[in-house]
Image (cartoon, rainbow, N blue to C red):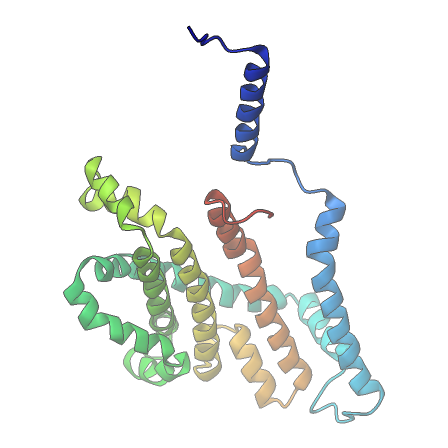
Length: 296
């Protein structure tokens, strides 16, 4: 009669196999060394900025562009930034635009999320509105500024309307794309477990569609920021306060290229900062929880 007892060698092999499987399933939580973070994430953009500044300064130094009304020196732009900071105006420029942009984006998020889910659930609505949203997404945001001014006047409501028209299609289409990529097996499993209707949307559809949804959010913020800058440049009015777009337009009207470059650098910096502080960490977290990101 064959023995069914496990020998010590077999037990050891089984324990080693279990340990290996546990190691594969265990997410590494060790923190990245500071030196590695600096060399891989901080140093490359710093070097890139330094190279841009070096090329910029060389164009001035070697008289490739010797007209300051066309290309100011980096030092001139720095002096304008320093002056605005010392006068207490710099943070006001940034806050005026950032507060408008974030509030408009949040409003777009509240509208676009149920709209995207409605398009994903109702085929008739998708067939009717889907092509219109795609067309609106490709329409330049600046095109909405003149009618928004005529309809609403020169006020903050006009700014928010332009932001909504620019951001809602991107967020809704991103969510729709994420829902389309949800495996049908997830939906069937959810219905089997009783997750139907709003419960299935909240517990099954939205979590599974998060990668596409987050991509839509990033694109929606980009469209929000661009739409706001277009509205501030075209619809400049003293009662609205001076945002970054108005600052850019003021520099153009005064033929002050240092001020123009100041506004351009601030617009670029704010856009990058919002992406790095909010959307990139959110995207990494979503990808990491799905095992799609090996290293942070």
